[in-house]
Image (cartoon, rainbow, N blue to C red; front, side, top):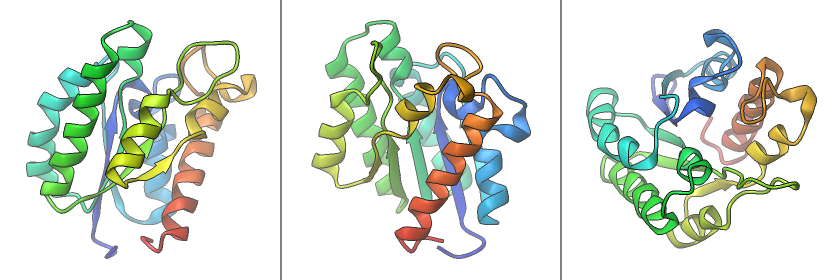
Length: 175
């Protein structure tokens, strides 16, 4: 990925950085680590249907080479229809690819005692072939020292997210 390539971090409060200052969000830390422009397009409380409506304008505005997609968590928390959320996330991937952007999908956990990514993300990744970071968000949220509240990382948690995403991008030869 060229040094002037734009990365679009797209999602809800986990992308926005709730629980930390703006400069401590994972997109801000990833920008520092990568030397690339990383647009933080996280909107707190957003469900996947709203994200699907918002994404085309951002793709058109920023022409990213990479989309980091972390969406659907609010659908899961609010017990929305999983099939609809899955369709929305799949459409987001299709929109990004239509704009010639690669996609990295982050798995979001389902509620429970032992956090793990909801199975829907594994299906989506398997069917679409996107780079899938399955356990990053669940692992961060399973560690009390990395959380600001029950569903959001703190600054240390966002740093862990950024470092792991950066490592995946390095390993894939994208950076």
